[in-house]
Image (cartoon, rainbow, N blue to C red; front, side, top):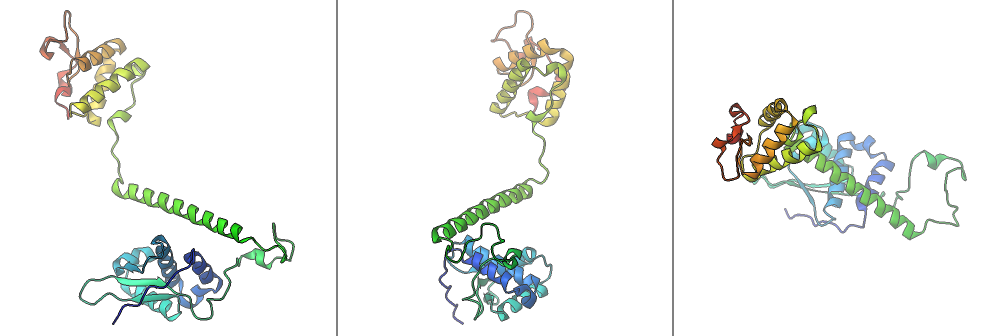
Length: 274
């Protein structure tokens, strides 16, 4: 059986289509799951800029529709097709091909206007805020501008939603960063933060980045040393390229080795931390 050709679409077809679905109370006829299926297909067509049919495997559609079994999906799809709201072609049996979908408007509804159908449409004439008289129709440019604004806002909302979902999916339980550890009160000064940041950057450049556990232990030991000794030790270690933290000893110079210095605490394992 030959595949049907994807139809030509007007701009913002999906918006008009969904308004017609609502205005004709289609959910009463085809059911809620079929209604959602039609909306999904129409807006996926819009997302593809109406370049071709939407393709889905059944397993992809189940979570989108909020159902867990094939039967409700199949019933909804049949109802949408029978109601004239959906075109569907099943994938070729045995070849693991997705089904092809696009939205359709039933005969007799295509000429129906998609004007608003909310409560204001039933208010007395002249009582609606900003209402135009028949002699003052909405200019075409204004309508197009409003629709373009709706479209852009919708795109931005979709992107933010996709980004949030992607972030939660890829990193549901983010680990704390070493740099986020709170500084003890005695070390919480601008001078200490500068040398501490420089030391951590030095460790990253040496490809021996400190783990959160190592950072916590190091800060605990540095706190017991006191502010000035801690600043001096960090500055000295960074300047001499050490991955451990060493206090300068009497007469120590930049050509000396760590063994000639006073270590902060070898139990920290800072010189081997990765």
